[in-house]
Length: 261
Image (cartoon, rainbow, N blue to C red; front, side, top):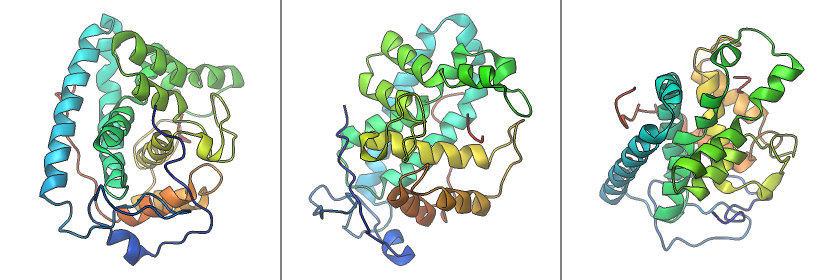
């Protein structure tokens, strides 16, 4: 399990210039009480070491993708392409934030895998319900809210990824404790789940969904900022919005076979 107290913050404030200048990970970077575990070593972004690590990470993700997909029941395999694009983009947005955090390679790998597989539980929910235009009924929303639990079950049943399953399970928790499934709040929410929640919401807002209008990247960043400190970790939002000025590149993991739900 990832440590739940890696990220601490009170009134820490980072300017855009300070945030965008934190360009690579340094394992020996000092951690200051009340601040994010930021990477302070300045190199050419992302740096040779960073590039090598991300290539290794993509290789690991490719292996886990094929391992899981081949073990899933055929009906779920057939539906995975519908989730693939969102999984791919959430992974890319998550990587952008991870580049600014001073975490171990193991922690980053777990969070990146969690980002890619965070919505795997939607394979267990009826397709028509997932794509329903307009507002969901309370009963329908209750079903949708079960997808984190379904995802954790899939990841623990078909792979040996308990830490990744934990992040999939908690990616819809809210900083103010009003999320689901366990209504965790603040730093009780695993750091990886807080990171994934931001990347997930940003892609959901900037993608076409039947139940909401697509927003521009700038509009999505403004919405993240509006919800910082209530739905999302405010310090992570500040970092993401600074990094969000850089376009996210689609990262090919494998051939493709809202209000965010």
